Image 1: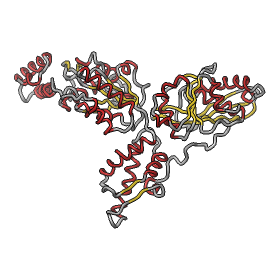
Image 2: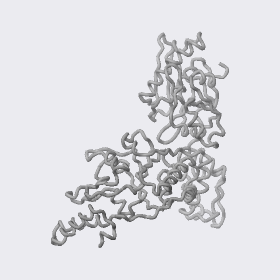
Image 3: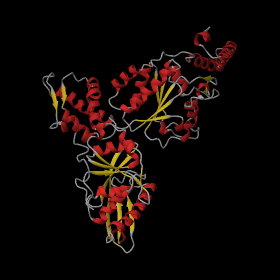
Image 4: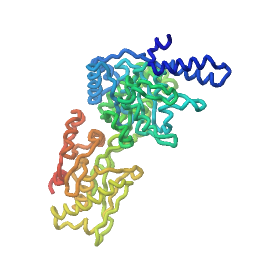
Length: 524
């Protein structure tokens, strides 16, 4: 009767009946009795055939996403398209989503919003640092203390067979002597296989095809290829300063006030002070650090209200003049290292797992030499070191063509450095930046001010496309850049950006380094 109520599949029903018969023959004091009873508890406790009624209304989903998240229109559109397809099919099963982006941009909370909009139960667990396959597929019952894996535990916890399960930090999966969890996830995250998922503990096929799996990752390069192939990647980029202002006013400040017991109207944070807090304390792509600074500010306010303010109804006003009294000295006192870039120094744009960042390429001549040489520092990786050698060769050839009398690079030892030497750097996207820095040094001419650039370059001067354009453009915006140079083939990435990101920037597209040279040195 119990099995009929649960709609248990025939294979599982057969095992349950066998175990019940076995249990009836065992003495209650026998160790085998408790093992069999625990096994039966897990089998019967699973939500066989029990599911929540899905809501596949696109407008309801849009309303939930807009309530929970500000901005991210491209991500929201992609999720709504996903739900719209599900409405036409009648279900959203068969897709594995992976949200990829820097920390603090709301990847996990988007998963919660999707679960709420679909009227599904939600379960989240982190796979970062996981080295044991048993965490995914369970322990065999021959071991003492054996139990099912996290996937089966999730189904029992939520009580339905169609939850939204978020696998956090999938790019940080480990590998140990107990096996490779990323290989175990191949079965879980494959819609053509997971309808008969076999947990080592249950040893009974379980249908996971109704489950919507959502993964989150900061970097895609550490995810094994076969696992990446099973997921549909949606990039969640960082926020602009204007986005952060709206997020702070709509979400962070009201939530923090409630958590810290601050009465309504007791603390007023001016718009200019909030912008200063964002620009000089919280420049990272996400809003997690901004949340910490807001909480720090309100803790100081709570202390003032309880100890210094005689009338608790008196309002505390925070503006640019007294902001430092609450959050300390600015972390980013200056927008950039150089107010005016000297000859040999050019700003480049880079992508990291933490989002986009601006970096300077510095070059100086150490001493005259009969033989041209180049020394590189700044913890560059192998790919970037090759880019410096290519840039040195191309810059000498370029100067011979454009300024035949200039023998500077051929007669001096050059030292090329990228500041923040404690941070490892790699990748080919600084190619045009390095060539420009070497040309600037050789001609003793600074480049156009407030200029930044990114792009790989070939040995013949062809400018090749690079990735992470949105993150790099946001980094340029944070650094106060007014002009950027991008590869011609990245024009489509630029066109996809929101208008408020592009509004304060003048962009130039280059398919050959000659175009970069004419922009960087307008009167050359």
